[in-house]
Amino acid sequence: MNLYYIHLGLDYYDYIESNNELRYEFQQHTNFIDDYFSKAIRKHKYRTDGTYNMISVSATEFELKSTKLQGFGDVIGVNLPFDRNRYEKIKGTEDCSYYLELLEEGFKKASEFKEIPLETLLNIIEEFKQGGYKNEWVHKKKRFKEDDLEVVLICQFTTNYFQLVATINQISTKKEVVSGVLIRTEVGVSIHEGMYKDVLVKDDEILITDKSDSPRIRINKAKIFDGVLDYVVMGDKEIVEMLSYQI
Image (tube, rainbow, N blue to C red; front, side, top):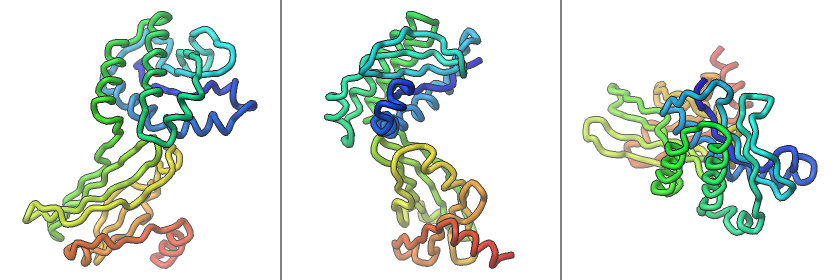
């Protein structure tokens, strides 16, 4: 069993009834950290002792619980004090220092209970800081030689939003033709997950498909060479109507 997940949030049981809005809001702002650290630690393929595959750091304003191996999901649960004033000062900004302090303290506390890759986790924190708290990756890069185009889809996941950026290059000149944001959503993996998958060129359009392989975004191919990113994001109703028409 490898260490596969890292989670930071407010204690579920302490806040689910007393202040679930605060718990959900905090989770939204830290969701991109969960995503970044989970992906980062998976690359190291750290093999645990077989009792856990996740480290969950939970903050609370209530009575602290002991660090323990939780009885569900093979999780090391770490409880820390939550400073709501510090959180209120940084939420909505790009300052993620308090979140990383909680993670660092949580990792150190977990290491007293179980053998974990502490040094590796602390290095990931430092790399994240040095990178400006950026969780960014190339989702897809495809070349369409007949159209002399290369389409690159870049995901940018921050504490305040998620966005999908398209950069379109001309293969023959090796120059960027156009670039822009196609999708921008509230934070939270469940919100944007499945909205984008593949890139296709069909007739006079570039299509971005979703997880069901249906066209989600339609880009005017001709206008690209004029430096114009002319596109339409289709809703579920429009997708159904388009598929029905094609059938």
